[in-house]
Image (cartoon, rainbow, N blue to C red):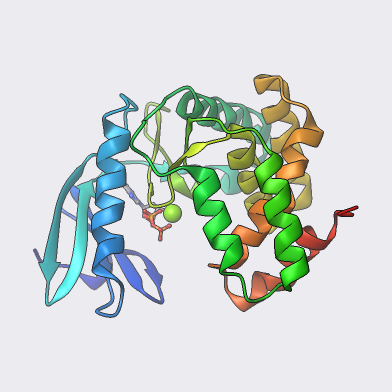
Length: 251
Ligand SMILES: Nc1ncnc2c1ncn2[C@@H]1O[C@H](COP(=O)(O)OP(=O)(O)O)[C@@H](O)[C@H]1O
Ligand SMILES: [Mg+2]
């Protein structure tokens, strides 16, 4: 497989994403754990098996000594690009975006990792907050109900591809778990809020309305998912996430 610079889509510190013929190739740095790469491929396969129509994983392979995942290429633009270039239709895009997330939440996949276990591991590993705050976060997490809905874990418009016919498909399943739809929505809200608070509010209103969920319930998850997000985010976003952890009065 020959990866060409002109076909580079995304470059991150530990990986690059290329288009190559009718595939997408996600190629990882040598230092990236091999298990993460196989895990992302496995997660994608599990999601395919739920019946969701997503780009299929084709292979895990090595290119120039680096591990890579090969996935079907879907022609189109990301919903992020569409939202940016066609702002007057923002509400319509948001409507479709929430419907798509609810379709994911309508699925189950019993072998996926549990969301509460994952969140609790992430919070326990957090160096940025003191033991008292970690304890409060874990206590809150424990008190939340346990659900088993398929959750994307990083559901944001850059992970939605809109085809020419308008059909949407969801990519990037590396963070998928089974758990609470409202926690998944809290994560999406934070991802929007990192960029623009108004869009984040539009999203949350629409999610709560369509799923008949109380805003306060999604908001209860915010400090928990902000803390979890802190385990993987760059320094620039740290202050923002710390604010969400501190917003709530843990009395
Ligand atoms: N199957 C696909 N078909 C078309 N484009 C894709 C596909 N998968 C990813 N992309 C594009 O590559 C970008 C990065 O891929 P993604 O899997 O989201 O990686 P990351 O973890 O870096 O966000 C996406 O935002 C999208 O633009
Ligand atoms: Mg992505």
